[in-house]
Amino acid sequence: MNGTVVKNQLIFDFASGSLGPSKSIFTSTYLYLNSKASSLNRTFEGMLGNNLIQNSDSKLESIKYSDCISDSKSASKKIISNNNPISKLVGSFENIKWKQVYKGFSEYVPDIKDEDELKLIKMDPGASVPLHSHGGKEYILVLDGSFCDEYGNYSIGDIQVNDQKVKHTPIASKDTGCICLSITEKDVIFFGRFASFLNLFTFIKSFFK
Image (tube, rainbow, N blue to C red):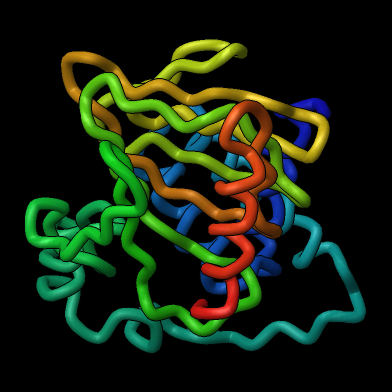
């Protein structure tokens, strides 16, 4: 799978407004943390805007500036207070009621009605996830700290997109641990010594989503 193509498609879909709630939150957080991704998003928005203007079938309305922003002072305050999108949703990471899945690994699932499951993952310093793959795509965005796997090192603002062909063993930084934002389209598939137990646990867990 070409990760760059998938990332660019995600940004393009966000710019066009075609993403669902979970992927919209995921992508807006990615754009907030990654300046290159944000720049690409502006390029896509410009392209889509020009295409809309040039489309003669689209009826454009003439509106005034005041119709969009009623109070420039309050608008400026809103821009200044624009924090990380995921922080607006869940608040401070320190105040989250994390649910421990196993030693060194916890997660938190925001209450979002969507087909895609958005979750926050917290890995303690040096913690690892056993070798696994996914039935569908897995999107991982690093929010704090860092992790590494067989394919590289990932720090704040980095995104990794995997599919069922990718098997990896993420390991959190021994110094900082790692907090990630994640979307998994289908359940995890584990491999190795404890695979049978872990896959059974995942299967049972799916009934309580």
